[in-house]
Image 1 (cartoon, one colour):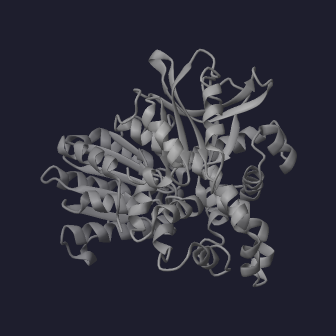
Image 2: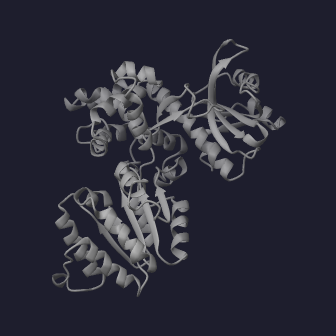
Image 3: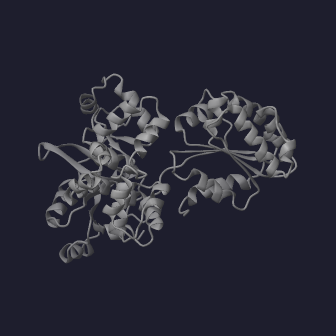
Length: 468
């Protein structure tokens, strides 16, 4: 099922409509939907689609030659290009006569076997392809190689792409589209445990319960996701074991560099390079308190951005011995509802931030928001550490929306509102004009009445967030 991706499809179509030579680079983690995106984009276009394999350069070139022969309806036994240069030169000649799309999927596989391929493409672009109507799309899952060999400043192809798309996971509303028969409460639980990778979502059997899906996909040695996160680390990185230790530490609550170094035993001087790599892969994110400079602040916290990795390193990896022994059901039973809700509470804060961002883009918030984040630090009134779960800021006028996120069955709503009131001026140089209370379930009638009576107080339930 293909859902979402409207922004990416629009961007690709806009470049295509401009005519002339266009060079698109599409990359992102495995199974995120890159090929599906390009299939959707090219469904009404004449397209030569080629996928490189993990095989010899000779075999990839042979398969490329066969794909060209089929596309132009030439006898395959008569077409065998002796080199990549000759194959691309032939395409350049044809592209002068007609407009078509060339999708070169899994480009990193071809480059691993022939490191000169980017240079060959660069020469072809500079001398021949740029004078044609070819729409060239290079696609790959090895993010490190795509960024270094295609987009990096040292790459022969640097500066030649006309559009690049680093494809991210689907958002929570798109995930709900992929699970059409699931109610918002369960849609969020699936989103928090599986993330927004389309392929993983297609594995979910929405006719059964969340726990049954967790059991069959995570807590069974035959389950697709049982070894998936570590398997992806093995494919992408040269030291998967060390990266795995870093992720396990973060999932277990070590969010500062010193805490991660202490828990993993990795030197504090070498740890930053591991963290930067995980950030570049969109697995981990480093956040700083709102208003602080991300480059210079020493108060940064590391969190696992990818929900599948977050869930796996928090609950599955520590239970691998039990799962391998056939005791996955018992291991899952240890994950009772209170522990699962505690984990989902952290993911709920991300959902609230995502909702604020969507509302800001749609201009549905009471302020013109340019930044969404969170804040933590010392509260001078309390003389203690404090935090604000979510912040949406109108930076130009130093005005804020501040919010509290409560993924609980019930809580003292009046106390939380009072706490938000006390934090209006907690962020230096800013003032909170609007207070938001984000909740798992709709607030009480009394709180709802307060929101109606005031213009600065808002309550948003999880169900309401799924209304768009």
